[in-house]
Image 1 (cartoon, one colour):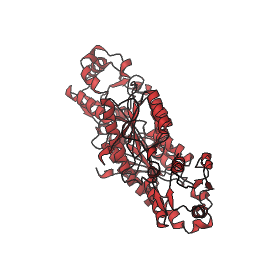
Image 2 (cartoon, one colour; image 1 turned 60 degrees about the horizontal axis):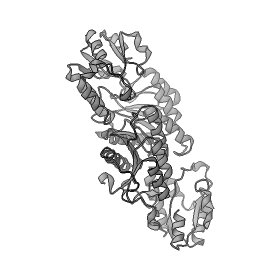
Image 3 (cartoon, chains in turn yellow, brown; image 1 turned 120 degrees about the vertical axis):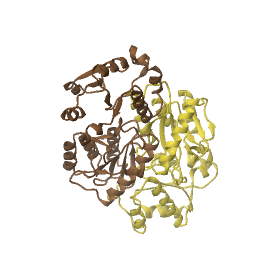
Image 4 (cartoon, one colour; image 1 turned 45 degrees about the horizontal axis):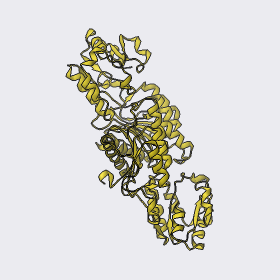
Length: 265
Length: 265
């Protein structure tokens, strides 16, 4: 989607994609596949294609460094690579950004290239949150804010004042699946549709690299978990395929709202 | 175990057990089974058996109030019961304690009756945490403290400075199963045994009612998740079957430590 947006704006682009992480679809655009550890090949591809401006995007699994084959170009960056093994996601990402910047690259956020991919402000679909939903939204953003300051995660689920789940390494999708199971087992009460998934970047997070994301699949999983809706930090969360996502929310009767500056942080 | 400890001390006792929640084993002691909603029957049993001092213990699933049949005695407590549907676990438990106290009962913590059930201070097994483990322990208790202040949960898992999982409604066991899956999928790196499960009561939590608990099963699940050990708030966490639990930790090479006043709260 980002490549499409860039192309539509006439920006020349080249995708450097990590094998096993990026999807085949990127091959529609000029691209170079690299494996984990092929740092030299990556820089060669960037240089050859005149890429001085970077957008770093997409989730990756933490590679098992013991099984990664490093190329010659990687040798130069060994101290940096070794430093990545420790700390939360956020520290790692900040370090990656600085790493590229020190080499003279300009790193941009996906939202800078394609602002239309960011979630807007206010009620985005047809359903509005009730007063009870609003109380859950406020509480959920309070939890997400507190977690974010500790570099833990970007999302939480609150149902009628009760914090049901908090995201850490498992990611939002797995957290929502867990909420659906908790609901089925009766652990969280069997309200009619109630509660909210809230999602916001960590305060002070390197937002150019790790914007939280939602999409139609998030909506489906929130619906399966019996939630009343989804609230995101307006302008700070990527919404994949906006129209499809909003359609899915409308179809399942979920609200979808963008909140300005949630968490008061 | 609590009933055994009380019996050993010559304390007369009567167990009021909720059907579907308490285990059959309680029948070894004088007891009365009640169903959710049989509040009148509960008070009758307490009165008949001269119980002026209570210990409230054991996890329960949140009952679906719509399917609970209330007895006549419950009618008097209807406003109280309706108030329980909202808020986190902690608020609910504080309200339950106050409810009994207002009726003239004295509510005690399990640790008051059986101090030997509480986790001690320092290294409890044969293995000691390394300096890296200690850093994980400090961080994990920081997360648990922040979460507890928001009435979220009592436990977190940190592996080499990375917060892998945070407990909310799913409970510690489910959280550890998730950590094992994350490890298997490579999401958290495949260190040799590393990281810690930290468990502590929420700050300001009604500790007479909802002490965090660990046991041999917790150790097995922490081992399966590849963790290096378990750290608990000393004197504030129930350790079920101490000897078995410590044996399990020794057998799997996990450290088991009680930390005084973790989280600095």
